[in-house]
Image 1 (tube, rainbow, N blue to C red):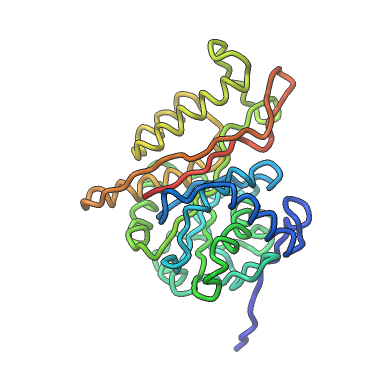
Image 2 (cartoon, rainbow, N blue to C red):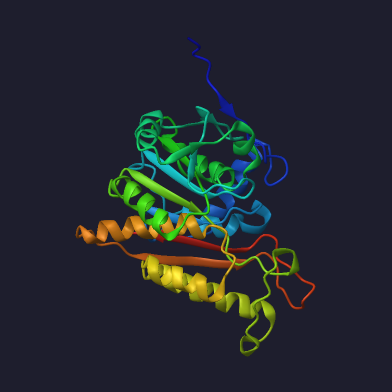
Length: 297
């Protein structure tokens, strides 16, 4: 029987972010040093997954709220961009590499999740092609570096779930969210606008196109802050906003709803919003989406 440790390489290092550990550490430190840690300890955050040039400073607002002294397990829920997936999938490796240090997958929790029969297995190719989870690994490593040998990660690739499945996965993850030693990282950009995304909603009353996009995103953010998965689902049905992490967000909102039924009080607030570019005409597009740093108490 083989004891070989399987690793996922940092496949987007050198393109979406620097492959140099010291350089990356200094860059992340710079962004984190510019924001406040007023909401610690966060139990869950929503943060973007674009290239760090576009979203690194925004994501810092969320990661600054992480308390490494109490966090022992980090669930990272990212949407699937490359393969059709109707459920959620788990990695087939043991280690996720970053230019800072390697992150260990929590095999005990993975075994518990496998037993439910609700998960598929990601191939290594799918795992390394996908960026939605990877873009959170360096920030996770940086936020946790003072306790780097004392935590594990639980990466979960989230497919195009129905509302019913979002409820089922929310219920499943709620018991983990209830544990203050666990942190949930939800990976999502916001509106992807332009012809290449086949999305061109424009409310002229808001002024220029990028103002309309901001208004649309902030409407969605306000609904997320209400922690009501039904209202968020209705918003998506009405405006079809191209929030790529809508299903991971839906799972998180349903997990919170489950905990609130049991008397747990939770609050949620967005701490930052940024756009990767200002769309001013119909030829413009934003392929990096809209960014929001968020936290839960």
